[in-house]
Image (cartoon, rainbow, N blue to C red):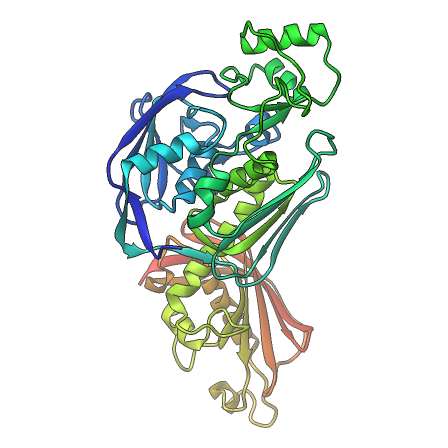
Length: 469
């Protein structure tokens, strides 16, 4: 994979009909600067906001928007069925581009990503000065939707690979699998031309929902999953507004359409997966395995990977050395928190989910200054300092990818439900678990629990405010 970010050399456009809306659309790819990412802009809406191609802007529910395509929205701006455009950009390893569009859906073309690929290649691709940004899959990640029999896994590897398996229990389709192991060598020739497919019953369902208004037999592979009679054929001709005969081919596909690959449906599912995982927002280093994937679940898996990216982005900002089992070591903590001796009461952070939870350690030694007076004959860590140590872990919990917490101060507003269960003595290790309860722009509330050897020693709810230093 290339190491520098890439954009296109020249702007270029294409026109066509949207699959579901039937709208005639003009789409323009425009070069963009470093770290711009991929964004869509509706040029037919005055004052429209750009829509970043990330999971935060996905419209997702149980409607056909999420089941049959991927929709992005920002304010009043909506763009449907973006997955083939995104797959083309990822497949050509283009990081930064503005996609202007004068309607709410890109052209469907032949149902593959190839029309977009051809245009982007015609525009030319150029390397930029800044390095690509990655989310690195450094440990196995899994996601399962048991109700649909859908499974995903991400495994560590040094490049981006995808493997997909589908099984619709249909004789014309059967079980299929496909794998992409080199984006540079395989995408254009082996996956970009793979066309979308659907079963006959899905075509009828979508038509009844007033979708596929721009669909025809040239933009999709229609697989017959039941017997056809004359009434069915008449209805299909009306759906697609065609005069020629419609027949059931020997291969189980309407009009005996020839497949571009023996496993073209599975390759198209892999193509869709590439497009949907583009919504992680950065390049991926990892092997993705997917069994029976669909758009809705692709997005759920993309959310998991994007969450990991955000955590890695924050960690890389403060942590110089990759230390196994440690998210932030003491040097990183000093970059984040303003506290210093004798009031820095966190030694390391061992678990961290931005804005959700953090787990910190405090090794309580006999050299702690407070033991000189509390109490010399029987050293006991003051309860208020246990609460303070938990609060410092809570300060780290506020880290996110948009705010520089190291330039802020965190002040207590209140402490509730404090309970001290056991004493903490020299030689103990405090394990402090903090969970975010409420998080507003400048104030937050969190619940903290501190353990020694698995036993609860202190718990409290804390409210605090963030202020500039």
